[in-house]
Image (cartoon, rainbow, N blue to C red; front, side, top):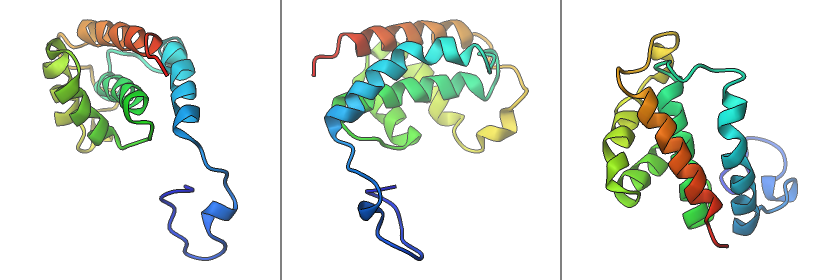
Length: 135
């Protein structure tokens, strides 16, 4: 909002919202990455064609924010993850990219066959990578 908000009427968002520094973002990502999967279990099933790619995208966003110190789109973070994380995750991340157009169409359908286990392993990998991040 502060950095990318478009004023239609009223004051500039920079006068209403304090700046969030890269260090602030990184600190919050470390907290969120650790608690994401336990919280997710309370409201979404990983064997769901919407949830599964959402989890991959979210962890890519966490890791990308740790790397660059800013928040970017799911697509940008997935592209970064595909190109910068361990090669073993490339297919899973590409699948999440391929599933990005119209994700709501997949709500209530099962996740792609064979994607739930790798997504859990990717979440573990990403949590560990985030936890090992040095500010």
